[in-house]
Length: 283
Image (cartoon, rainbow, N blue to C red; front, side, top):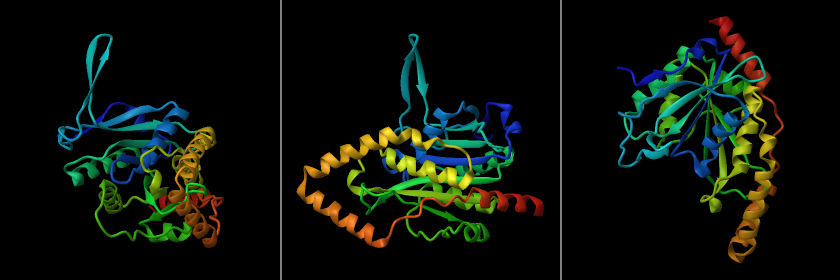
């Protein structure tokens, strides 16, 4: 029996969808990646498409379900993974997949995600991640992109996967997507390691901005400007109050400035569109 439960037939009407996925866990520092998915849901009217049943993927003593009272009745919220369809203002849709990184059966879990892509006719997967970095909070936050497909990486000027070491579920998922013959792009943002304890709207905004540049799907990331300003002011105040940290941040700023400004203006959506069109024509 499949753990994948389709809750709507809207999957059959999705327009040339791109899947955007993020999971709370190993590569979700500051909650930046899953916050990007939540932000997209606020901008659109999402339609739930599918749920991956958590029963065989979680140790509920580690990730306990939450109990709520609704009109006096108990409701249990399980740590499931859900897929939503977002009807964007362009000629393709976005499908979001998010949830908590599972504890068990990662290979089987990954096949369920791939199945969503196949059943909806998804043309591209984009995964979002965030990790601690040796970067200053006062400068633009870099989003690093990579692609497993050599041609796609070359055309977009992206790196190829080079990480070696312990993996989160995203690493397993990338392998499964690649094995299924579907293109996948990874977007990863670095968060200043000295402010890891707080949500980072600046990192979330950077991810959303880069996602729009790559896919052409509007994210309305400018709507986070006030939150970013508030976060920046909060961190500034904390840094000023600690001379040791202030000196450390000044050192990071000098290193950043010496390395040169980041080019965050490159719009890759047209090149991605051409790549996908050519790929479909060849198929």
